[in-house]
Image (cartoon, rainbow, N blue to C red; front, side, top):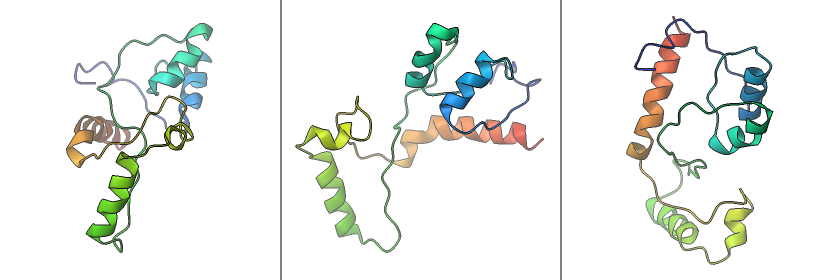
Amino acid sequence: MDAGVFDSMTYDFTGKHENVAYSVLQGRHDAGGLKPDVAEKFMAQGLKVIAESAPVYEHVIGVGPKVDAATMKKIQAALVNLKDPTVATSIQKEYTGFAITKPSDYANLFGIIKKVDAKISK
């Protein structure tokens, strides 16, 4: 995006990552952003990966404002210290566990989202 190559392109939200792949393969869009595991599923059909963003944590577990700090820490500890791997693999088969994250872990993704939002709102 920083190179300006996307300045003349239009942006659409297609919903699921699979929809992005279908749209690109069917010629409705020239390019699209999708998760690496989804892209891999469609490569045999002709989808080409031309770039990847920095890795981001995919599934986030959050708590609401009524949850006190002590309870939040207990939940975090329970997730980070899981002994049963089927808990993680029930979300996605490649998952091995959980990690505590902070907003700065998503800085790259937030930057991309801001650029796309700015382009869409023009």
